Length: 40
Image (tube, rainbow, N blue to C red; front, side, top):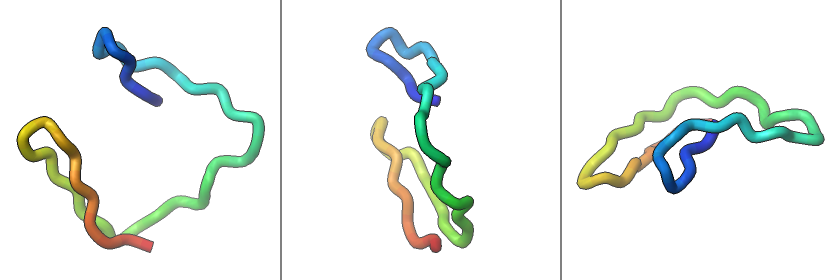
């Protein structure tokens, strides 16, 4: 999923397998930006 300029979510088609699931991270939105820390 991705947000476009009109702030609507759209599904993105892929041609290959998606990446493996990740874990052990944290995320926060601050001043309109998302920050992701850590993870595997």
